[in-house]
Length: 477
Figure 1 (cartoon, rainbow, N blue to C red):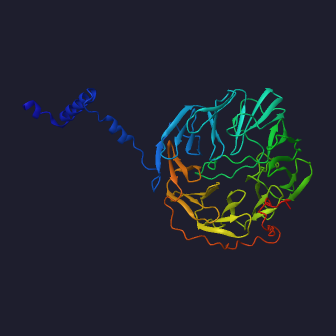
Figure 2: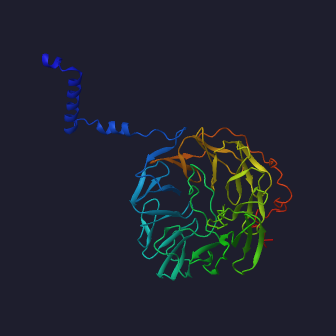
Figure 3: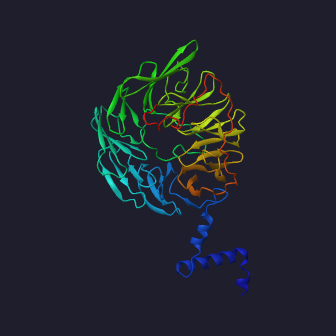
């Protein structure tokens, strides 16, 4: 009895630990899993909290919403999780993964680096729908999947597939693609997207395939019609030129060094006929690094539009198809995000963000912002990342109505029809549109006048009801 009383605090703790170990070993009671769950429990990555939060196997390389699933690409693995609750549906080894197809019929293409071939998986079950053993490159879009294989370095075949198709829609010959195995979505000659801190560059998911694609092969550009597979042009750029395929046109960008500056000339050619269709002088598409005006970058823009700097220093958005000015900012304003329909612009004093519709003059919405705000546009929402305080905000691109307002230091990883995935480290979570959104009055249908850009660079106003690029007009005129 005296021995028990003399155990002291350390002795009682040791006795208790021995008792717990004995109970756990005999299966009577095991508290360790619950204790570990408590220690390993992740704190919420946003306020208000997300619908679900899960820790994935490794730091994500990319995250994509594919129908009712979330595809998480990691360094050596890919996994699928339920969009409803975040539960893991399947996992497999893969060095790269890319989603193709729309929200209704998505698929996941996976493969291994340095190995030819790839597999097309069902995103819900992980079941292989189609397998290829020859392809060295894969490009994924909402309405098409392209791959290429080569029997010789100068004898390659480009194939187009429906995302869930089993036979190619068309094939085309290319005199090479590139050396080595290129994995998913090798760079083509198009536009260079604007980046934003804390918003992943692939947040919008796969886009619809452009009408024309430019494949660089041995210093030349092969322009392919994605509807038929016909190779329309095989062009070599001039010594001071850079080529890009944007908006169904082959764009020749000439940069000449003279008088201590760079002079730019943009010429758009119809690849089907080889005829020039529009030309603009003095627009800087930020392709040159000013070291002798050498052009090492693709032009800035997105889809069918180009973002450049006008001769008077103001930023301008051009239509790649016909060269029209769709938007000209005021002095000091900066375009943070742009697509075919809208632009998010930061004011010259860096205190406000403007939402502007390219098919109409004027500002659709205005909201306060900090000097380090970033933005991105997706088919489902406009995303805004702010610092001090750290927040992620989603708005309707046209009205500016808030869909989500989160106090979080996490990144926006993927957007979908009903919400978005955010993540920090290995933690990812799903938030539905409407979570934490402030009460916003109905949008005013009357546009707020924008600053007058002046007569020289004023976009045309006679667009009528045909749309910003007259795509709804029967004759395109």
